Image (cartoon, rainbow, N blue to C red; front, side, top):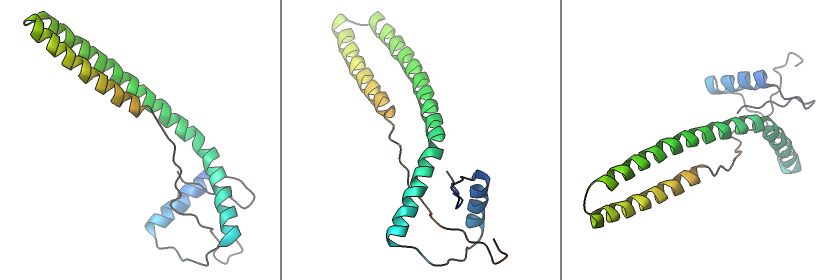
Length: 139
């Protein structure tokens, strides 16, 4: 997610994408660095804007993940049911019971793994935090 926050607080998406494209295609000229309380304040302001901008993206990713997991759960449940039916039709009772116990354990582990996939923890990690200054033409 690229983010450009204007000095007046506006978030400008197209500008952010344009600057990012320039950063990855050219070598920027670096100026001075900020530190101390100015750096902390700048980071906090940027983080707040990034969280606000990222909510929709995060929501979309979570919805897509839930849908994918729902489909995976449907396919898995169908496959385990088919295997269970096949086991129940063939073999001695002791062998069937043993195979059914193994299948139950396999299904339990599969469901645990599926459950872990639903636990989503968002993480916002800045890659580059910089101030863009105009090139002398009064920008």
